[in-house]
Each structure stands twice: as C-alpha cells, then as structure tokens.
Length: 302
Image 1 (tube, rainbow, N blue to C red):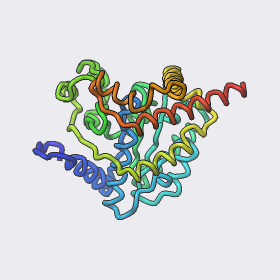
Image 2: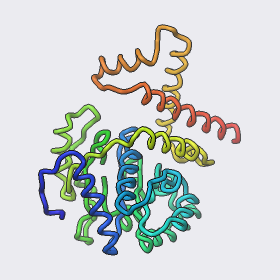
Image 3: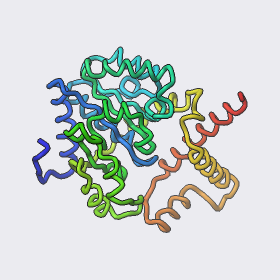
Image 4: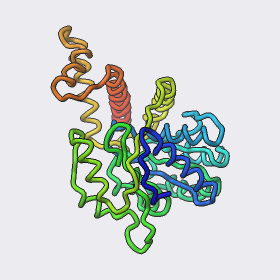
C-alpha cells in the first residue's frame, strides 16, 4: 500500500488512508494518529472528518459528544465506555499529552489506561496545537503511528513511523533540514519541502465538515475547552495577548460606526489576498471572549 504511487485526486487519498487505518486495526496492528499545526489551521476539522469517515466504514454515526474528549477524566471515561473500534479524538491534547504535565498524578493514571486503546482497537487521534517536541516522548514514540504538519486549512502531509527502531523513529532532526515556511508560502513550494523528509508518505486533502456537524462540534467544544481549572497552564502568554487584541478590535467595532465586520473582512481580502468569512471572525471573537473570561476568573481566585 505504501509503495503504491497512484494519481488519485480530490479526497480519494483521504478515504483510502482512513480505510487503510481501519484494516490495520482489524489486523491487530492498531493506529494512533497525531495531527499538528499552528492554531486555526483546521486540526479539529481534519480529525472530525477522519473519525466520521471511520464511523461510516464501521456502520455507526459520529457524535462529537461521544467521540471527542478534552481532559484526562473525559479521555479515561471514554476509553472505558466506547465500544471496540470506535474513534476517540483528543482535542486540544496539550492538556494531557505535553511533556511539561506528564508527571502529574492524573496523567500517570491516563498512561496506564492507554493500553486499553490498543486492546479495544480504538481509532485514537491527537490534536496537538504546539510544537511536536513538547509532546511527551511516550506518546510520540510508543503510541503514535502516523503523523499529519497541516500546512494549510484542509491540507496536510502524512508521515509514517520509521521501520528502524534503533534510530529516532520520526527523524526529528530531518524536519529542521527541510526548511521553514509561513502561511503565505506558495503551497507547491511547501509540498516540495515536506516531501524531502525520509518519513514522508503522501500529501492529503481533507474534506470540510458540513455546517451542521461543525456547529454541533463547536457547542460541545465550548462546553469543555475552558471548563478547566488549569487553563493558565495550558495556554501560552501569546494566546492570551492575541485574545486581548481580538477583543480590543471587537470593542473598537462596537464604538466606531465606520468600522464593521464587513470592512474588516474586505480589508483582509484586499490587503493580504486571504479570503475569510464573517463567521470565522465571529468564532475568533467568541473564542477570545471565553479565554479572557476564564483567565480573569482564575486571576481573581489567586
């Protein structure tokens, strides 16, 4: 399968990849996928569509409330209650998969429970928003089989763990050799860079979640993402600063009748040639509002 080089287009590589992962689990090999990228590049959307395709293949309906977890207790509970071969998305996995927090009591308990992911053949997906080197080594080396450095919304590169266990199985140093890029780099150039890595397998394009499913996911996410007493430990200062800047822009829009969301969207399109929707701006504002509210709430407790 991995040696095959076809001319598949559209989302067929995506479907074949999910199908391949399912057959691996059926053959008792199992699969854990790590999805990484910068904030806002669609990690959760990609994970949702992979889990949804998986559910279609095994004949069940994907449900965000059932198949997505946001904290240690939720992950452990879902590992217990999910039936064999169901998917489990660990969204915002920085909460329980970062090297900095791995020595906590609850994370040690989670580490013990991860063996059940194998025995129940669950399709385990981690969405990790920071640099991969911050991921706890046990996760990266012992549990992760496939790695997806989303380089654009809905576009990513699939890497497969090296078959030679003597060396670093993910060839981390080789990622530094391929060179850097930004969100403004031409996609063709990014793809050429990523293909230089020895663990590279294929470029993959993810379908966009339908609006009804994404809204259902957002409702579930909003109930969980900031419902954590350790938010300050799980976000960087830059995230807080960015949230404050977004809210400041919202405040200016509310008090300045000449500035509207339409004008903001049009300015971004004209000035940076990047089209975004009003809904995307509103989501950024809502997200920032929840983060700042939680940060202020925790600050008052100190």
